[in-house]
Image (tube, rainbow, N blue to C red; front, side, top):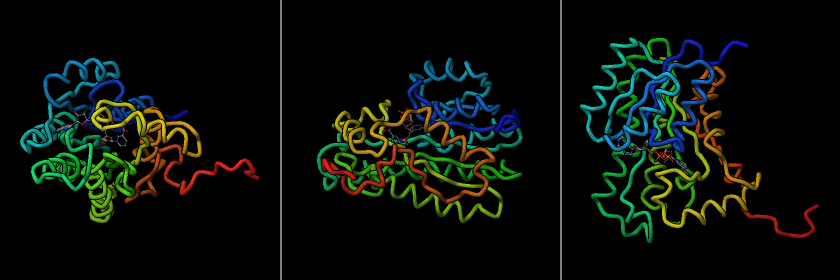
Length: 264
Ligand code: NAD
């Protein structure tokens, strides 16, 4: 059968290790014939990312810290030079000071609020600005969000506020870029044990809660998020833009769990 991503070239930002959601999406796209470029944040992660990226034949593996606009410019200059075009971008980047991913949202500091918004929200727009000129025949931009944007999740705090802004920016970018056949979507993933997730207080309890209360009675895997990403990034998703798609074992539809013994 023809591969869904044959001939497509994409940038994946946010791989830290093999558990990263970005890696799940990169693999799903590669398995369907995409050529994937990667960015990594800093030397410590370079050691992890290079072998992973190499294992799926990546040739473009560049450093990028999204707080430094020049480093984002450099990545896109490289893509322009090597590929001259771009079909998709995966933005799987978020950061907040760990000390504020516990306790009350009320205690958020101005400095960490601004840092969280810059890294976790603005960077998606900054990346989109640079990707658009390379997407001459259209394209697909994808970011990652979480249910803490919609409802209060203990300890998610400023990150929940940032994800709400990220989801709104998906809608505004989708409206701006539709005429250029560029689609912009987010996946709202259920909790997954990754490096970033380890920064959230009480993470184990959140995982357990999701497992017990979601319709599928389990947590989702990076492979499942990867496959959903493949749908949005490939031509299977050409009718979809401005969407926040939940890949969370259905958790977001549950208002109250039915514990009654008389279920039928
Ligand atoms: P991860 O730790 O594997 O990935 C987070 C990535 O963000 C890392 O690669 C890190 O290097 C990068 N990053 C942070 N600050 C950066 C900066 N200044 N410049 C460049 N890169 C930077 O964890 P993950 O869970 O795969 O996270 C990916 C995305 O998925 C995040 O947006 C996260 O909020 C979102 N998400 C995660 C979950 C979950 O439960 N793990 C659920 C829903 C959404």
